[in-house]
Length: 232
Image 1 (cartoon, rainbow, N blue to C red):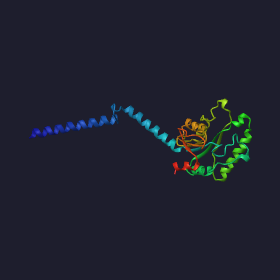
Image 2 (cartoon, rainbow, N blue to C red):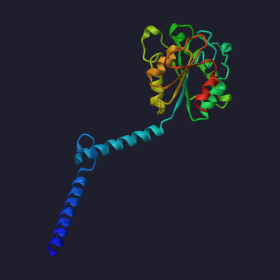
Image 3 (cartoon, helix red, strand yellow):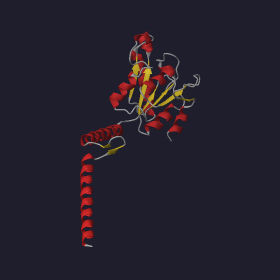
Image 4 (cartoon, rainbow, N blue to C red):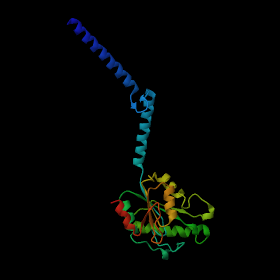
């Protein structure tokens, strides 16, 4: 009987020793993976650094602002082709209501417009600025703040980086205002607007033009207020 008791005590001590060794070894090697069993300690440190970087990125994204990007002629005002005369400033139906809707949801508002009429000599930059100022003032009258208008004055053969369908102006806005482009919105009336949004990695793209066929990489709307349904 005494021998059996001694044997049981010995086995218990052995098992306790094995548990302690396993605990120490597991603590040093931290994590378990499918492929390699327990990770080495330095691998765990790398994983911790990756987690810290990920959290920092999340904080950066949290501080970023979403934006509503608008083409000008054809979305904000009627497009009479190379518009610059104030008597031809006619606002599109529901434009103020839809922009106010997104401003109330904390979107920053930007206008991204190709104005090659300046580069072609059809009107001057000063005339364009006066026209733009009239647009800004009317938005202010509706308690809407346009953060900035970005205009490309080049002609297509200039092969610049700012003319849509290139994304130069959008990327400039993103840099200046710390924008979350993926979760932002672009409303345009031409395929080149949608292509610029794609090139800028803007996920929410709306084509506002009854005359254009459905474009594969965006949602077509015939009424600006239809866009609200996706965000209510």
